[in-house]
Length: 372
Length: 48
Image (cartoon, rainbow over all chains, first blue to last red; front, side, top):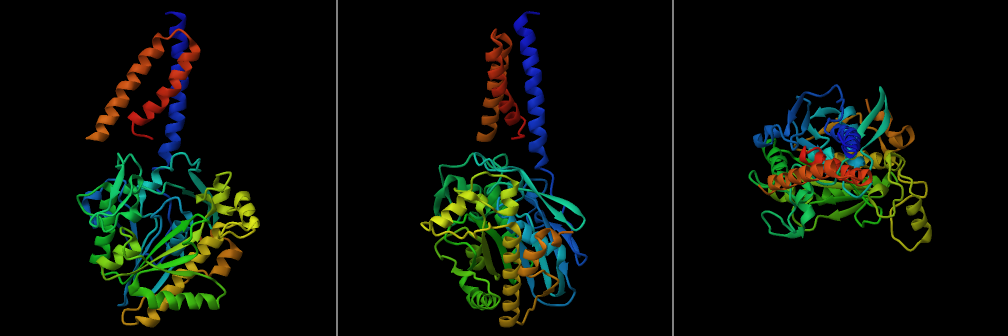
């Protein structure tokens, strides 16, 4: 054996070790997070129950059902449409792990875009997970990608043409679940997931639905409730009730010609009244600085602090940061206010829930205090 | 179909890099090729 063959063997062994280490890290993201539902849980279903072609794929995800046994309305709550927006799926998890349903039914999908939870966005330097201290110890959650994993849907077209409207968007958006409604059974992977959720809304005769999100501090639609025109009275009533609790939410009407989004397509294509809520999340913004798990949980960004102090940018950022507890608390409080408004104005099919923490409770005790 | 064509191209390139690495006489160039190979292997195995 020549000398360069020996060095090749040594270097290949080192490369194999590096590949194995990297593979181990990447494969960890394929393990579903441990979610511990409240004692009121009655059934766990799969999204593939409504779309059998998703069975065994990364598009399948768990649906947690809480049925009070008392006739009433049905509510669907989605978190994790964008797995890089943690307040969305942590708020859904807090609700999943605490809720009591006194009348009607509640369905929770905490991680709607299951595929997006299996990878991170390229070139963002994002952490793969973050941890919170729950009631029974440390809980770790994945921090995923805004869109489906390219291993599940590839290649992206140069221009994404939304079905059925033909609206054109950047090619990257072809893997964005919240641009893929109403979807189609024989469409792209992400369109199939979107179609399964729309099928669920129809088959379960859902009355009220929520899609929880976050956005960068410089995005205009944050700390907002986006509503379909069917739910305008509920949105305004909830915003007013929240103002009385000293909480400011911007009501935003869903644009009628911006297609593919949950608050538009769910409302147009089914009987449901949909709402989408946004909070301000520094880790998604361009000024965020060091990108790590601390930024997800504490939400402290020197870049955004300086932008706030400069006064030249219109951003939603508090001087002490935007911690996950505040963002989750906002979502849970907004959700509760909208359910209360629904029961007040559309009382014929009530959905009565209890045991959810208020915004001040989540803020003062920390979000981990409401995780099992 | 395009996806599997892409995977096949990456697999062929990985084999080419491996052969070049074994025949290369400079260990520094071997190390550079190994770094490229890691990425190709993870992609062929559909891990990343």
